[in-house]
Image (cartoon, rainbow, N blue to C red):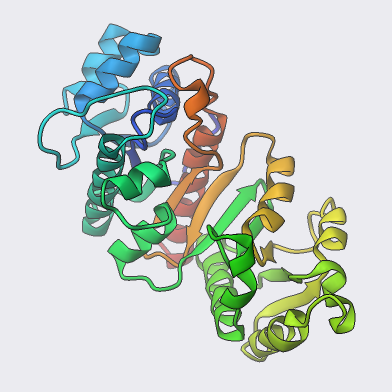
Length: 345
């Protein structure tokens, strides 16, 4: 694991267990195993009921008995990993591969506990394991996903989802919604807000002095002068001009297929802004090859996650790769370093 840090103070990262019936616990335990072997310069605080760690370790045998005891003793550990329990009544009931109100309850309470820790300054960042929106809703948490859940807890009205594969970054104007709802959800005000947040985030936490931003069109061929839709003329282009007037280096709207066909030129833009989920995530995941990272811009703290879901179909089979989760931890550490350098710490 290639974790580096410029000072001697060890950062602390809260890790939420995610959906206890998906692959989240497995990739976390695999990552803990890597920590035990490499002792990287970070402390992981895993937010989970202890019975979840015991269950999945007994099923998959990913941690040695000594490491498991070290994690579960809640004290200072030689592995750099400790455990904090979310606020639950009773033990968590685990059913691998099946979304349930119980798995949603544990996932939601872990997110709440992680926010408490980061808001109090007890940790420097949050890395979240995958959750099921179905399970989350069944447990009474009415959020489309982590981004909106954490934003609500933090009092943020416009969080921005950004995914990264190395220096290739994609941000989204709309996130988890039906495709037929996307056009009506676009507004110049919303696009300008996203561009301003990205501009500030890249300066503050990525140490990019003048971020270069490219914006996609919504329609094929950027609307072809209105033949295939007029959102580019009515909404997107005016938003870009408004952002430029605020000193933001932004270009577009570009036809998405042509723009991403040229994305091998990694120096062209610091972030690409897509209008909807699959428009941006298809090229991102093609580039990432299983090592992408999800990052939430606009929060008062650092939050990352892997770029995949709960993968119920392989939960409990020992097949899940921790690669994207490890990248999410590395990415969080880089943001901590960049933030401290930018603040003069």
